[in-house]
Structures are given as structure tokens and as C-alpha cells.
Image (cartoon, rainbow, N blue to C red; front, side, top):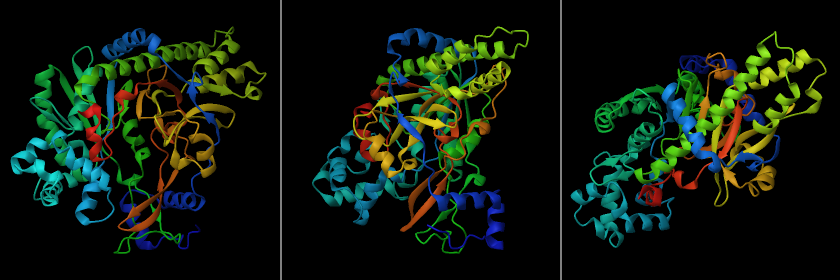
Length: 502
């Protein structure tokens, strides 16, 4: 697409300036929309023992290391929670409107109504609700009650507050499950649990009010102190879109349409945390209590794996920085980087000058570090772990299918055996204890261009480099295999029927 109207009007400039967005930034977004998604120079897909490590054999030792760091360091859990539940109920909305729905999914919903966590509420309102599978009139009343403002209004709720699980004496939303998870693997030696949720502005007050009451209950139940903080996605991270003719897309009042800039815009929120280590997990990826011990052990082992390598990295950095040390084993450091940190260095960059080589190695190691969980795919994957060429380095990266060309999808995705469940632990301080400026370690060229729909209009939209894609593109990245049982996202209502939620 070539953009027909590249210039912003005076009204446009005033409008974007009010959001804190510079016209220079808009111009860059226009250029990216014209060019399309940049081609990612993939070398091959990552696999077990080729970028992905199975740590099962050493998990007990790594878990103990992780527990030590949780007890003695400042660890926080970061949960993007700004999503609405509209996609979750898409088929139910479609059935009510008579279009764009799956009959199979509607049938499954009606047959399994008793298994949903909100069934006790429905049964009080509709004593005959179990007949919904046979009587469309009853099913229609139930779905309207679930979704409409006159009923439970779930269609307008943030996903964080939709009931996901039912226990004997209580039900829990995903936000509550994230709190309980945090108590399991973020509680420090003084029984403090630090959690951070990113929110959408329109649901901020609603969620904060809910959390205030939840905090008191869970502090009493688990005998902990909960430190829960929130942040909003900044208006300045909104982005533009173009229509099918390549023109800047405008709303009916002729103002520019500004959209959320994707989860990569949350890098600013993550950068604002004052922690040593941060766990990242999506709001809808939670499991019931029966699976939490398995998940907790893996979370602690992932932190232990990170901490063990980080200690080695810090030792090397201090050795390089010590000017009195002239006998550094450069070849040994290079071997450690390539064998253990999954950074393959082109031989022509290892210069003859010892001083310049030391600086190169120092820069390679003095970066934020992350350990990412990877799950064996049971079928087609929508992107995942790959080896990617970055100038003179080949490194591990997480690539989404929206970043791949049709040829790359055909060549690599069919062979890919793993996918990334947005399950990460990060080390965001350097060897001197100072916090990294995370914005310096973004691969800014790996923007994402996506196709979206807005009120029936097809759009091409700009998104920032994804938080765990290009947003962390210049971090040290380590990938470990994690069990499929602890990956249970709820993208649509019938996902609540999966074993992890029953």
C-alpha cells in the first residue's frame, strides 16, 4: 500500500500532541506501514539441545537456588491485565445477533453449562437453565443475562474479573488466581508478595475496588502482606492505522483513529519496576490449585537457572573491568558465551586487539537477562523460538507468526516443535546492582504490522516491537522446556472446560 495522504493536518497535529505523541513518531509509523513488517533473518527453529534446555534432571537443585533468591532479593510479578473479555464471548454475541458464530461452540456451551464457574449464579436466576441445551429460548435468556448490563454484564467486563474457577467454598477470577500464584512463588523471607498489574483506563477504578477487598481476604487466609501496584498503558503509546486504500484511517468525526500499540508498549511499565527479578505472565493463563505445585516448582527452577548463569556473567564482567587483571581467559569466555548463553559470535569479529575484544565481550554480557518457558507443540504453532541473525551475532529470539513472511511460515513453522506461552523471568539489574534502562535493549526495527477490523472496516495497524519479541530483542535470552499442563490460557469461553480449569 502507498499512503495517499502522508501529511497531517493542523487538527491532526494538535490531536496527537494532546496524547503526548510527536509528529516525528507518527511519520516513522507511516513509513513502517508503507513498508510492511520487516523480514526477520531466521536461521532455523530452536529445538531441544539446540537453544532449548530441559532442566528436569536438575530441577530440585535449581528450585532451591530460586527459593534462596526469592527469599533474599526483591522479586515482583508483572501481569498485563488490560484486556477486555469481548473476544472471550465472541461466539455468544454472534449467536444472539445471528451471525459470525460457531454452532459447535454454542452447542458445547449449552451442553456443559453446569461445568462453568458462574453456573450457581445462573441456576438461582433460571431454575430451568439445564434445559438450555434443548430449548433455544432458555439459552437466549441465559446468554443475554450473562452479557448484558441488565444482567451480569460479562460482555463489558475486563477479562481479569470474569469468574474462571469454582472451588468448594469460593470462586476465583484470573486476577485472584494470579494473586494466589504470586503467594506461591514470589513470597519473600518477610512474607511480602509484590505484584504489578497493567490496566486499561476504563476499567482502572473497577479493578482497584475489587482488589482492595480481595487483598484483605487473601492476606488473612495466607498470612502474607500483599503489595499490589498498578500502571496504565500510556496514551503516548497509541498508534495509527491505514485503510485498504492506504489512507490514514479516521473515525466518523474525521479524527485520526489511535489504537493501543500492542503489548510492546508495556515495556515502559516494566521499565518502571524497582525489582531485582520479575516474573511475567498473561492474565488469562492460570490453573486451579491442584496444578499450582507443579507450576510453582518450575517457576522457582527457572529463576534458579537464570540466577546461576547471572552469577557467572557478573563474575566475568567484574574480571574484565578489573584493569589490574591482564590474564583473562578470552577463549574460555567466548566458549561459555556460545555454549551456555546461546550467543553465536561470527569469528571475524573476534579482533586481534585484546583490549577491543574485552570491550566486545563486556558489552555482550552487560545486558538484561531472561529465561523463557517453551512448551512442546501439540499441533500448529503461531510463532515461537528461533535462532535469528543479528548483525555479527546469531541469538535466540521469540518470533510471532505476524512477523513472518508466507515463505518463512511454510519453511519454519511446519518444522517448529515448540511455542512460547508468555512465561518469563527477568533479571533487570547489572553486575553493579544498578537497574538497566530497558529501552536501550529494544530491537526497534522489529515492529509488527497487523490486519485488524474496526466496526466492519479492514485496517492495517502498527504495533511496537512485542514486549517479549523485539521489545527484549537485545537481551540475553535463555529458553527452557516447561510442562504443557501448566499452560491453560482462556481465549474463548469454552476454554474453561479444559482440564486445567475443572
